[in-house]
Image 1 (cartoon, rainbow, N blue to C red):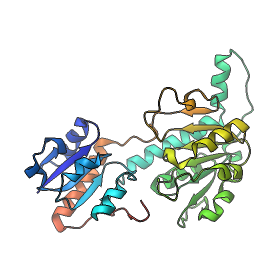
Image 2 (spheres, rainbow, N blue to C red; image 1 turned 180 degrees about the vertical axis):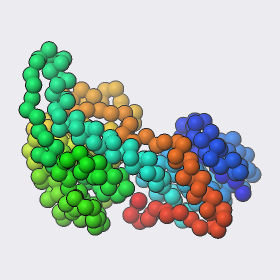
Image 3 (cartoon, one colour; image 1 turned 30 degrees about the vertical axis):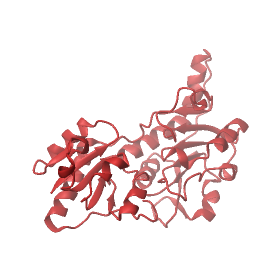
Image 4 (cartoon, rainbow, N blue to C red; image 1 turned 90 degrees about the vertical axis):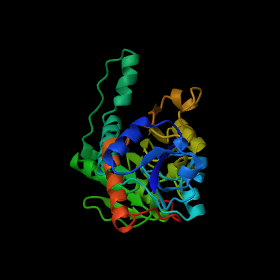
Amino acid sequence: MSIAFASRQPAPAWLDALRAALPEESLREVGELSDSEAATVDIAIVADPDPAQLARLTSIKWIHSVWAGVERLVPLARERALPLVRLHDPELARTMAEAVLAWTYYLQRDMRAYAANQRAAVWQPRPYRVPSETTVTLVGLGELGSAAAARLLDAGFRVRGWSRTQKHIPGVECYVGLSVLGTSIAKADIVVLLVPLTPETKGLFNTSTFAAMKRGASLINFARGAVIARDALFDALNSGQLQHAVLDVFEQEPLPADDPFWRHPAVTVLPHISAPTNRRTAAKIVAENIRRYRADAGLPEFVDLERGY
C-alpha cells in the first residue's frame, strides 16, 4: 500500500517535508499516479484538495489533513464513510495564540488610530488603558481558543469564553450554548472568533449578534469568513455599533481587489496569516500518526462528521 498527497495547488514544500518525515513510505502526489497506482493508495494526506483528486483514490482507508480546518472535506468523508483526521499541532496553537495576543494589543493600544494620525500628520497621544480594563471574549474554546486564553490571561486581560460544549479553563468565565452567546459577548471590548465553520456556525455573527455586543466594541475574525454575515458586519461598522474589525479570513480568498473590505476605514484586512501551519512540525505529527496506524491499525482521533469538527 502507499500514500498519496492531494492539494489544489502545487505543493513541493509539503511533499519534501512529508517525505523527510516518512522515508520508509512511498508517497507521491495524486496527479503523478496512474489509475492502477492510485488504486493501491490506502492513506490520503491532503491540504484543501479538489474532491476529484480523492475520487481517484478508490482504496483509501482514511484521510489526514495537514490543516486544522476541514469543513470542505466533511461532505466527502461523510459520503464515503471515511475517517477524517485534522491536524492537532501544539505549534499551530502557539502561533494562533500569538496572533490573538498581537491583534488584541493592536486594538487595545489604539494602533489603528495612530496609523491614521500618521497619514494625516497629526501628533495626538491617546489615553492608555491597562489590559485589566479590557475584556476579551473568545468565541471557540478548542485547542486554539484555549491556548489563546492562556496568552491573554498571562498578559493581564479579562477573559471570557464561549463554546458549544462545556469547557473549564482557570481564570476564564466560560459560557456554553447558543442561548448564552449574547451574554458572553455583551461586556466584551474585543470579541475573537475561533470557531470551526459548520452549518451551526455559518452566519453565527449576524445582525442580532452584533446588536448584543457592547457599542463601540471591536471584532477579530480568525475563524472562517462565513461565520460572519457580511452585510450585517458592514451595517454594524457603519452605524458605529462596532468600532473596528480585524479580518484574516474571507469567503473568497484571495480577497478580490474591488472588495469594499479593502477600503473600509474601520476594517483591517489580513491575507489569512494568523496561524500558518509549520510544515516541519505538522509533517512529524502526520508521520507519527501513520506509523502508529501501520503498527496496529489504530486511527488517531478523527472528526465527528455530524458536528463537523
